Length: 515
Image 1 (cartoon, rainbow, N blue to C red):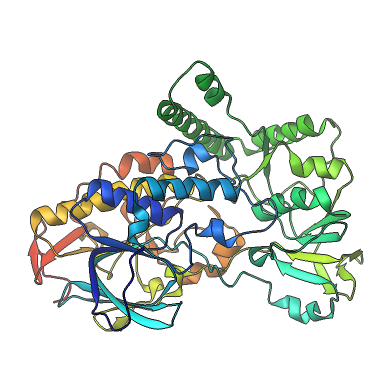
Image 2: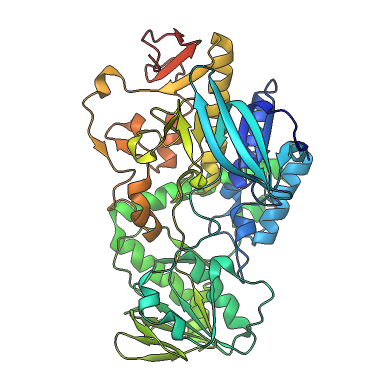
């Protein structure tokens, strides 16, 4: 691991990557492979790699995407499609070791500011080295933001809980995101408040050792039950197909099936819901399994992420009497647990909040361009990757309806292609700007709430960049469309403005954005 000693001069890199999670490690790999001329470093706040898989340590933590698509395209996944955090961290560790990426990672560095100067065409980045509180300074030509989209240190708790007497509860209380790995819940009555992927993960894990588990939700979530295996992968291995080929073929199969499923969710949501119900009945062995009111969501399929339920474990816990579902709101917390709005008393030794994230743009890092603070809500996104008024920077924002990593790989190609193009034409600055046909474009929120509306997004939507009503100026969350569109982008297109020393270079002749 590289480091700078106290008092050392500013360290300069061609590219700085922020974050050593699934996005940062994948981006580092692509940069090494596709831009071998570029010097780079990865700045990571934590003392190890992993990002979200290092943050979350609650019981049963696992992927909710299959690893054939959540894994990188360049590193075959060998194992069950749904994997534990431990398995994912090992996979990432192998990528780091096999490609000597660890030589470039600076752990324990909290970025405190990023400022771009058009006079110098340079980013200045300040960071605190957490081991000794030393302030360090970096410069780079290009900033690749891979820090994710939520606050890793401050999870979301409904603010009204304090008014409803959370402090009166005398038992143990934890947010799932801040889980204490040493906590022993054996034989305890556990109340999980929330729904969605986190709740779906912790509930069956708690049910294995707890005296009983109750899941209190305001509204139900859609669950997709299936076996934790891929029959095509198993068959290909059985007949002796090599792992890279297995990975490539199965990855293609999963993406094809996801595309077909997504289209069916939009075209025939009621039929899809009946099929989801049938899968629950198959895994529980109960054809009379009751879905009302606890398993019938109020929103349409795919308006929120579909929670994967391997082997139907949540529903099995309910059928076996280990789990009680309660669909209601909280009237108030009591000394022994929770009283719901309908008057039901739920007693618990441990309450676990599975209430989600706080959205956090760019990790909460202050940004400035030419001395002016950046308000991300004043910018417009270019395909969810770059932003008007912010030069020489890309942000990895993955997919909510497909595996996040599909976009990591795709953006790796895009960013590296752009960096190589800049080098070829002698540009030191790249900005995205509206074309003539975009000047009167309608400006919209990042994403429409009737398209995708999980709580963390709707709560933080005002802090997000804006989008336009044209394909180039929005993140459409459609991998199957973007996998055709993004690789076909021409770097000489009109929306890209290249300059060197403030003077235009390349094919678009216009005044430099700093004029």
